[in-house]
Length: 222
Image (tube, rainbow, N blue to C red; front, side, top):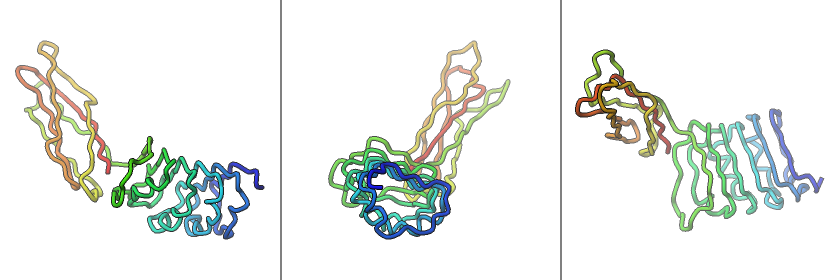
């Protein structure tokens, strides 16, 4: 058993892990628990995992919450490079934990819809991460009328549901445009306002351009 490098428990009904179980897997490099809502309650028994050579830890869709994660993070081995925590109930993640895991290059919190923000307290060094995945909110807005073009500028209010804990970062870009062929192509989009509850995006044109329609796709992330 000491030579086992990969251990994967997916779609199981695991309810208990014997304390010290992972002491037997000193060569373990990849560990996965996925799609098992009961596992999060016994993760405290990961004692010995810090004695492995673990590089890739995946804990997906196991009802993991902030309390569970705080209880086990201290025993994560220093060799950890990839940490995947998709589809859980995590709401915050201290950046200091990333700082402490000096070889961690990838953190995936995607599809954890309750995630709100990172905690930056006590971060004093450059973080090792090169890949970070989080879940935000996204959507599309637009204006269209033909043959009479809409009256620009057009402002659209986006309500974040649920609200973010802090003002998010927002990205947006054109996803369609319909302009009369006889005039020059002129279109502008801008973020007019944003807070943790809402954002206002504006679409406009100028001079003699007949802009029949314009659309934007947007994404807001903590």
